[in-house]
Image 1 (cartoon, rainbow, N blue to C red):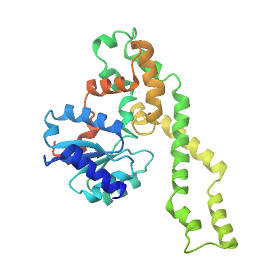
Image 2: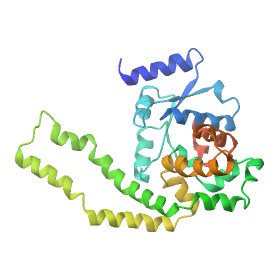
Image 3: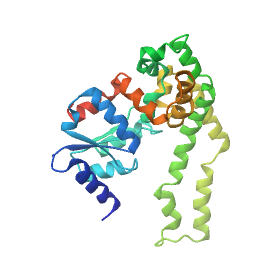
Image 4: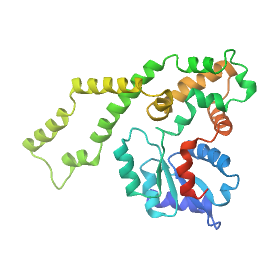
Length: 270
């Protein structure tokens, strides 16, 4: 049995059984908790029709959906362009591409965090919401540059690791001679124009300066690192120490249901 078939079988045997429920398939184990919290806010009886199951990887989600077309899948947008989002959605109609960079992007916007804090915790910020925002944004310039680097460098890295490039050299049915090898590798190296890459990074930075703050937080910031390194650290210092996962779950449970998830609830009939 393949790993894919085994994962599907495990979801059916361990979570669905004879209930006839459908699965909302997410990328990882952390995503299960996040979407379970969102679903409880959306519909208290959601679990009568659905289970939330993890695929184990982003690429695995559409693969599972191909085998189980009545299930719904969710993947992070990450650094995908609008064209890539459209292509993925067209190729798999029951796939929902998150409108934000990743699920952690729901836990980095100072305005949304403030809305999630109960009054007793808000009172710990002497200057209210502006104090929270100032603390979170203390090193934002560095994170904007990091985001620019991520959105420029990671697509190059992803492209170079694609099967297209690997097979152009490592296909045993078409082993390249020296001339072909030189031509292929030279083509790769031509993509690494240092001046052009630096220019693209700076263009990204300039673009971020034109955005509304929430647009940067939701779609461009690398929230997978920003949440634990910045948001969790700020809240630990002001509200007292707690485990990262515990705080994650509490914020998800107390924050207003994000409006941009509405298309997912439509897909799920909720």
